Image (cartoon, rainbow, N blue to C red; front, side, top):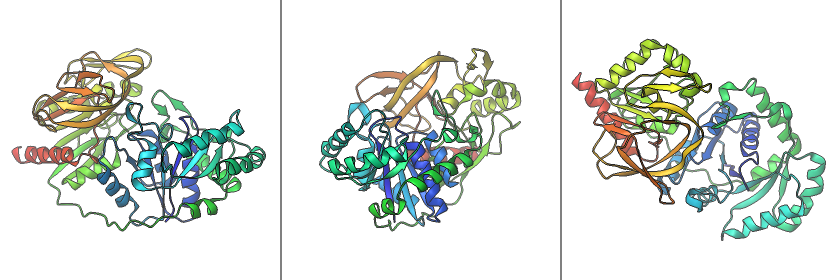
Length: 446
């Protein structure tokens, strides 16, 4: 089975564009590929899913122990014909200015061959020096090939022999810049896949260009690895139903996190806080992150849903609300123009625009009291990524970044987890088990 990682020297090298082009090309060849994204990113996997029309799984060694990560990877590969992993930031860049949870560490954990995506820009021979540095930086770099991105075929033909001679790595081709196929960005990264007009056409154009300018047969031959012998786990009987918010305002949800809930005995039913008038019949409530600030008006004007959610949370329905979901439970939320809109009003605090990333990155979350998901003193990995803040972010947990910085955050009770930190149920299945168990108990007690 072809299995590879696409990495780069730095963010902005076009990894997502190359990966989507490659996934689309492999899909058109009938290889039925699956996709993965290193790190906690929600948006890049949306493009993988758009290219493949199947879920894309995150691989994060800060949020997930190594053996659990291998299990998630192998389970996703079951029955597939190829695997493409998109790295994160620069190849060796990880948590706390180390290589921990970097793309390289994931490649090393899974023993994956790596295709380095190189954007030449204003360099030529200097690229070879940089690539040789990457090769020598760790004992096994796992680098197997080079692919030139945003590079004309004519320049690639001149540059490839030089890079091959100096680095010993094959150049498998290039992906020229296609203005009509560019993927636009906003404050949390790329626009979501659903927002980009004619995304399928753009992905097809990228795949056409990659097929025309790269030797994909050579690339796949370089990256063949034994297929994992893993069978999907059967789901246990359903013991509770969890209502999961899913619409344009709440789209930051890991599919493998929902799978962890299903493995814990929860059925996930989806609803839209923007469009639906009432909650579906459920025993638990999951409000993930997303872009509620972009849809504050629609969320606020859906008063029946705001009331329904407020009543459910106050009645003790087990509830997890992360980042955007946490802002929704607050008193109000300012939109991009600064207009303030009433929200569910369950928690104190107003959602306000800060204009920069707030408390960005990984953190270890330690509980100060027993609650829905945590026991007092228990620690779990989490991450934050938001440009809006709350005037009352809470103090039920202590968060500590890898560099030692600390802050208080979040709200908790026997039926609630709410705060800016995103949790990863797939990497910490005990949290999913506790959520499902609480929902099952709530169901019996009604």
